[in-house]
Amino acid sequence: MAQGEFLRRIERLGTGLCFVVFPAIWVFAFAAHPTLLKPQWFLEPEALIRRAHGDGLLQAAHALVTLNTALLVPIALHFKKRLEGTSAAWSGLVGATLAIVGACLLAADKGALCLTMSALDTLPEQEFSQMMPGLVAIFSLKGWAGLVWGLLLMPIGIIIQTLGMWTTRVLPRGQLVLLLVGVAFIGFPDGAEVINLVAAVAMAGAMIPHGAKLIRSSRE
Figure 1 (cartoon, rainbow, N blue to C red):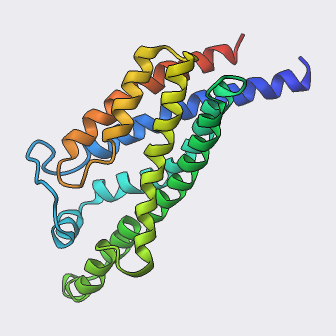
Figure 2: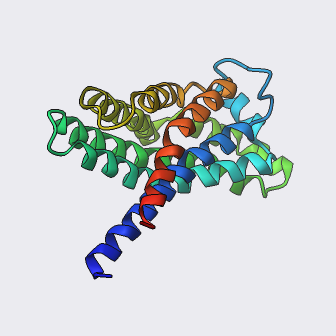
């Protein structure tokens, strides 16, 4: 097998695995939230802190989401590649750029809000209580922490790419509908994670079959 063909197969395999793992981790992360079936709409920062405090499973899920953001890079670049040479090629480039920047800021968000929480959870309860004002400031996105609002660029970028793929029909429209619904609602405000979970399942319904197809093609 020529080296170039071998590398292309490895690329398809790796990209396919990203399409499978990325939505699966989102499903797990949202399913791990407490009071999943008892939504608490638009929780305030202190309520979010107290809900996450001492919840090891939730902290592990957030750590996985932090790492998971990296998988969006090959996914966005794959969509860009699928749109190259079409009338919507611009949407592939613009969408990939926005999605990748948004993914970086989502990683920053999880690092600031969730990894910080897991570190402070190791403190005695009295010392943790003394850290509450600082945590509230962080969770309220004070100062430069407000930059993490840029994580919204991630779903916006994928939506732009999805609309481009819709007009050019480079992917089945049924999958694109699921992807659009999933990405549009994946960032629903904290407290009603059951909505996020449904969105993640929809996203998985779009991405995993495509990922499986890429994995199979890497073996042919």
